[in-house]
Structure formats: C-alpha cells, structure tokens
Image (cartoon, rainbow, N blue to C red):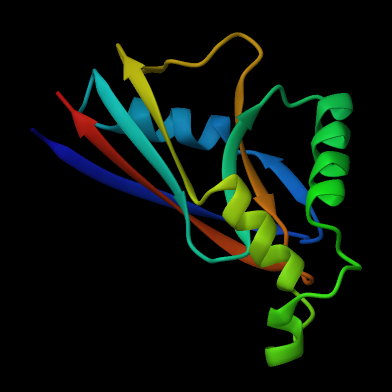
Length: 139
C-alpha cells in the first residue's frame, strides 16, 4: 500500500496554546497522490498533543480550563523536583491528550464532522516552534 509523508512547523506560545491545523493537514492530503486512506498526524515532543475539537473560543476556553483542573500548573511535580525546568505539568497534560491522531480521507477529503477540527495543543512553559509530521497511507 502506498505511503506518503509530509509535515509543517508552527510557532506556538506554550501554556495551553491551541492552534487549528486542519487546513494544513487537508492541504497535505489534497497534494498527495493518494485519493483514499488514513493520515496520521503526529507532534514531535513530550509537552504537546494532538486531538480534535470544535475550534471556537468557548470550547477552546472550556478545554483549557478542564486541562488546568486535571493537571494544574501550580501543583508540585516530581519532574520539576528532578530537572528544575518547571514543565512537569506540560508532560502530564501531553500524555493525557496524546501525541498523534489518525483521520480517514476519501476523495482527498478529510473524514471530519462539520464542527470538528484537528488541533495542536502546546503545554510547555515557553514558546517554541513545533514540528508536525504527517504520514498518509492509502491508494
């Protein structure tokens, strides 16, 4: 089965910054030689995650608040005690969200719901450039 790879980088602010990357993923699928298959979207690093949400300000805020309640920034983390970098919360948050997501596509169109977007979440305690990797499998 044919496989194609693509990717892009995105400047993120950290501290729960959320970016809609649906357009970049859809463009890569459209530009591929594949018509039908699955695209795996993966973020490099252990302090960021990939998921889907309805990307509108209310849901974005709700998700950020929920993540803060689950893995609060101000809580003590053993990672911080060991390394002193203050981003233990970011590692826990990223592990809960996950580093990759697979989305089917048909006729070069992503199989997402009307109000469903692919989002990159950056939890680190500093801004940085994030690398997103795409691998498409199909025909």
